[in-house]
Structures are given as C-alpha cells and as structure tokens.
Image (cartoon, rainbow, N blue to C red; front, side, top):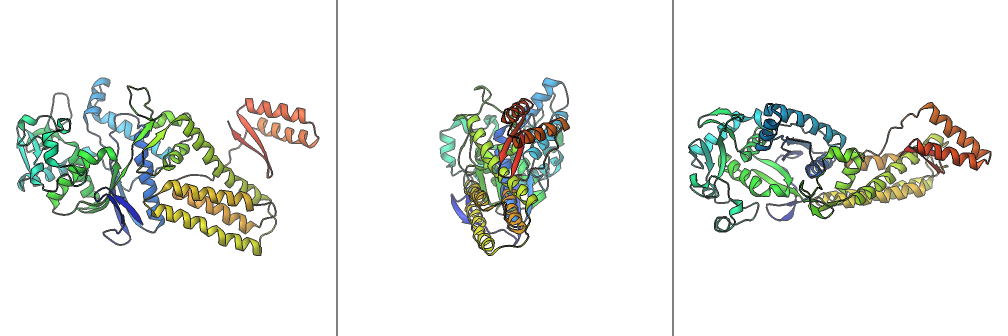
Length: 468
C-alpha cells in the first residue's frame, strides 16, 4: 500500500512501526458551532482510510480530538452568557450526530483538550528544562531556532519566513527572542476559562494540545498523522517541533493531508454567503450523498461543491442502491439454488472488480477509481442478474457490491420502509388497473402518489417505489 507522505513529498510503501497495527492521529474540529462541509472532508476521507486499513487486516488505533478551548468558543460563550464548557459540550454532541449521519465511525478515542491540561503543563515544563522553551511574564514560547529541522514538513525556509512574511508571525513578538517563536502557554484574560500552572493562571496554546493527546493515546512515535492541508503550517510543523524536541524521537512517520473544498469554484466563507454546515446539507440530501461526493475525487485534490455536483452524486449513488435492490427482488423470486457452469465463470470474472478496487485504494487511497470499480460491478450485476439466475449467483453478486461499498462507508443495502396502508392500497389498485389495461386510471393513481411524495418505478422485477 502506497501513501503520499507530505514530509517527503512522494509516495511511499506503508510500513507500520509495529506489524499489523496502525497508530493514527487526525486533527478534529474546534467545537464552537455546527461543523461545516470543509470539516466533513477530513472526517470522511480519513475514516475511509481507517476502514480500508482494517479491511487489509490492520488493527487501527484511531485518535481524533475535539479542540474544546479556543478564542471562538470563548467568544460564543460570552455572546450567549454561558460557560465555555456548555458551548463546547453542546457542539461535541452535535458533531457526533453529524458524524453518525455521514457514517463516520467514532474514533477509538476522542480526547478533549480541556481534559488533558496536566499533560500539557508537563510537556511544556519538559521543553523548558531542555532549553527549547522559555517564559516571559506568564507566557511560554517555543524556540523555533533551537530545532534545526523546523520547516521540514511545510518545506519552508525559516530565514525566509523571518525576513519576509510577517503574516505568518505570531502576535506578541516584542516579548519573544525570535519573531517565529510560538506560544505554548498563554496567561488568562478577564472572563476566560483558565487553569493553574507554574507560570500562573492561563491556558495552553493550540499546537501543544495535539502533541500531548497524540502522545498519551498513541505513544511517542505514531504511524500516521492526518488533517486538512491548511494545518501543515504552522500547526503540524509546530507539533513536530514540540514532540520531537520533548521525546527525542521521530513524531509521525507518514503525514497525510486532504485538499481544500471550494463552493462553486470559490473558497467557502461566510462573507461570500457560500458557507454550508453539514446539518444544512442534511436537510436537503441524505448525508450518504455528501459522503459519496467527498470520495468521488482523490483526497489530495481540491474538490468543488455545487448543487449540480450533489445532484449528480445523488443519482450516481442511487444507481448502486438500485442495483442492490434489484438483486434483492430477483432473489425473492429465484427458484434455483445451484450455480450453473456459466455462473461459475461469471463469478470468476467478478473477482476482477475487487482486484481493481484494491489496486485503486492501495495507490494512495484513490477512492475515485475505487468508486469506478464499484460501478463496473454494478453494470456487471445489471447485465447478468436475471429472473432465471440462481440464488447462489444473485447472493454472491449482491454481497460483493455491498461489501466494496461498505469499505468506503457507503450504505447501499437500504432497509425497506413500510408504507401507510392507504399508499399500499393505491399501489395495489394501480397494479390491478394496469393488468386490466385501464392505463388512464393507472396514470391517475401514479400522479396521486407523486403528489403524496411517492415515486413509482416500473421495472422488470416489478413495481418499486421511493420517496421524492
């Protein structure tokens, strides 16, 4: 399995630190509001990476944090006149609901920054003792110049950063030994939550939080660290500096970063009015459609969100669901159980689709090509699944579609919903009208059902329905 490593800027064979086990850390959201669809992309793509690794037989320890102390959380709390903890806990619950609706599995551990403060204080103390950090009037800074590999992830030159790009510098530089030194601990401000430390009352800087949580739940060395490409600098760069200076070991072997998500070819922002939460999208689409859309491009590529693309994704996903449903209907009416010689040949041919799927996923988690392999399988099912097919053949083909889709976290075996008796009776009446060749009445009933939000489809397997 090849993964593109941001650290080396090339694809590398994935070899875990411990055979058969993967230690993976993914930066989670700051919980001050409902998550937006930009937050959803890393959740979905790295959940899929985890699923595929487990499919390959790895035991994956998957850690994804919640940043539950932050300026935005504090601002929201002040606006509402409630404690910051009330805001963060509320939106952690909402985030977990959205994740479940996107079929993103819970992490092995979801640590929260505010519950790991003591570990952060201990790591900061360690960095001070080793000469990598210093305190000025209650603020503790990290000495970037002392870590001679600083910039190795973002491939930025430290001197160029110092001389040119002041937008990258952290505020409060008049206190610092060097403008690019970053904050490990900051003193409290009036009305803000705080914790007691050797440097006074205050709270941790953002970067130290992830270093500490990764170390506690995964160890000093981890296999994979992942997140959005916007986190490469300074967040992940600073994590490397802190962790490697504190632990004296390589922090993470493979760094995976997903590309940006644009809305109608523009960057998502509230000021442009093109900012969408996952909850808002869920009011218009099954969030399985959002998941399908997110996986329809390679995770490292930028991806463009639009209504047209979502409608296209909805139709594409429906093709897979319909194929599975058709096979189920055929199975209900199948009379023969034994495989024919021709069916045995077809099942041997069908193995090619799983092979293509695995080759795509082994090539840096290419979910777009993996989806293409599933669609080839769907075409195969639609071509060869017939009324006289055997139970064994139909079952094998149906299970193969469900199995490959499940690796991508796509739920395509939809549980059939029970309809109201009135609707059931109308469908039965329409069937009787069609049998009697009373097509005018059949069409009237179809229109009546459509007005009730039920769309009928006449297929070779019989009449089917779905909600509009």
